Length: 132
Image (cartoon, rainbow, N blue to C red):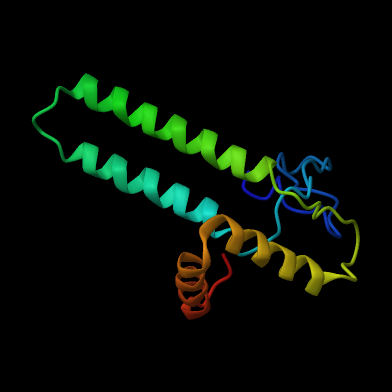
């Protein structure tokens, strides 16, 4: 599901219903990596929900309701962030302008997060052994 808003690339989308031969998605709303804003939204939703789960003073129904509200707000904010990029990352086949797309994605992240948070996230990203 997370790959649906990324570029279609050589695959032509995501084989979401494998073994079906149909590929969907590949909309190019966001770049493959360094979507730090979306990562921070998801992390915030997880942390807030864990804190809510630790509140024993509230009734279970109230905790569930607040948890659903936090999830809904996080989902809406992430969807907003994905769909309002001012750059079209969509491409098919091999990517001749990979460096351009990567630089533009980082520019957008720096604009959204600010210099300080962007540098912190970039440093964290470079220490990881996986791409995110």
